[in-house]
Length: 493
Ligand code: FRU
Image 1: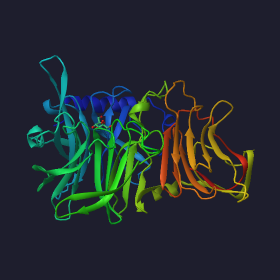
Image 2: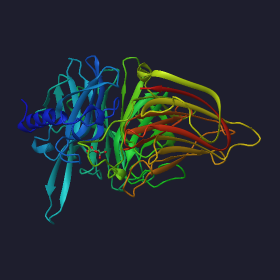
Image 3: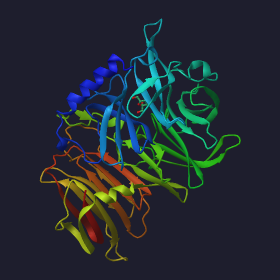
Image 4: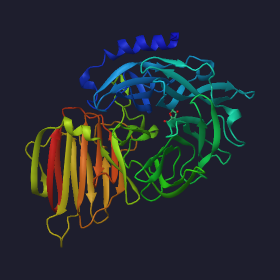
């Protein structure tokens, strides 16, 4: 039975969506149907399609009581909205249906596992969250909340675990048919940890162990965990709040963390070997992965950061979009990402130049656009005398531009959107240390109207950011202080 709250949300979004022109949205990035979007939820392949749910407040372009929005796609790039899947309509989730995940049940139904939030008034007048894990079962369109919700609450937690910061279950089915989930939690030390729970049938859950404790190393509370095997290693993704920068890593406040390590399946023991940020740009948070039918591990994140949410366009009826879906792999102990191969099917109007000389400002015929896939391969014109600086500027006209600039001597790549049209003094730059020998660098830039994502050195690093620049600003230009050579291939998307 659909609750009144969900019925109202569905009617509202159906009408409100029609007020948003297609041109006001990205083309192949999923954006909020109307109102506000944050984390990807329930990213999965179910019944022949990719399903993406998302943290959703349909009634306003700011965060509010969380619903689950819903969309489906066959290629991860062309999305079709479905009616909202969940509304905060039960006592245990009346203050929000927070993030969670999805898994297919053996009987063909789809199980959603999410965090129910209920606020409790304290004797001293304050308010505290009670966060519990809840289930809903459905057919890919309509979902029924489980009668025995919540399935995990305070009573399932070991001593010292917070019941107020206990959220974002990521569920999966093991080869033996049983289920596991990882959930973010705050232990007594005030930082974060990831808890592992198991279930025989997906409905009745038991605490297994603290899988990984932050011990105040990487930020505080760990949100939105994901755990999976990749290329013979175990990977834990999480989004820590309140991060301290370390060198060139973790500059985003609310950041992202990838731990790569060994895993003992007998004892569920994770041994960390490497740590890194997942994205080195400005806007990327709370990613979630799924396994494609062909075995690819695909990740999508929220193309936004809580620290920079005030960077918004005044007249947009939607706020929040997802990142490009990215295929993951491991190379030399690092997480690599590349845009899903499906993006190549969208390419048209190829323009190619080889060995172009870049010295001072250069424009190239046919190189412009705001929906493009463009790869640059850069090298010095003279090995003995390497250029000082290289820059590519885009979303450019007389007034506006966003750029990547590279200083080979420092091996630092910088994104700068200060002149993208922002009228707010918030963070608009990020620097990243990249791997480069003798001024050589490869950078693939994907633009989709309101975003830029750059894949550096075949995906060794990614830098993502939102831009709100007028679409008329579609110029692209290059600059070198000194002499550089560049190969370039560019497609419209
Ligand atoms: C991460 C997060 C999650 C929570 C959701 C609420 O961005 O804070 O931890 O479930 O957003 O919307």
